[in-house]
Image (cartoon, rainbow, N blue to C red; front, side, top):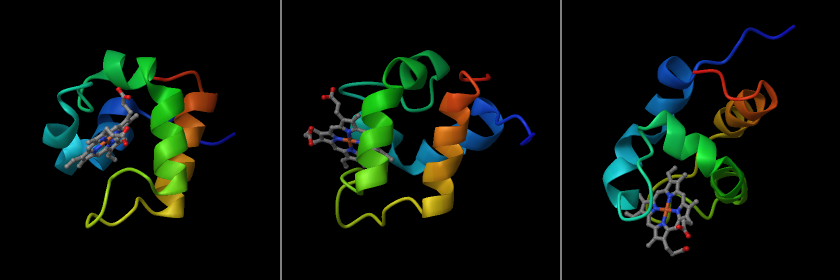
Length: 76
Ligand code: HEM
């Protein structure tokens, strides 16, 4: 079994640079917000729609890490 993904250790750092750009809608540093919006967040990081240009998209490995975190039922 894959190791358990941790929000604080693995997921929050992915979004650290982008937090300010999204505070109007949600706090990407906050567990409850990211969990509540996980589906739209996943759709947009997977499609490359977020973060918007000129920011580089998350890597396929980072997108997969987020998917694993969802599958594991959002460990804190
Ligand atoms: C990995 C980082 C990011 C994620 C996961 C993310 C996620 C999302 C999500 C889920 C929405 C839809 C929210 C809603 O409708 O309430 C959204 C919309 C939006 N985001 Fe982000 N975002 C990221 C980075 C950024 C950054 C850095 C900016 C600006 C500098 C930004 C600007 C916007 C804007 C303007 C919208 C509304 C327009 C639209 O729906 O496309 N986002 N984002």
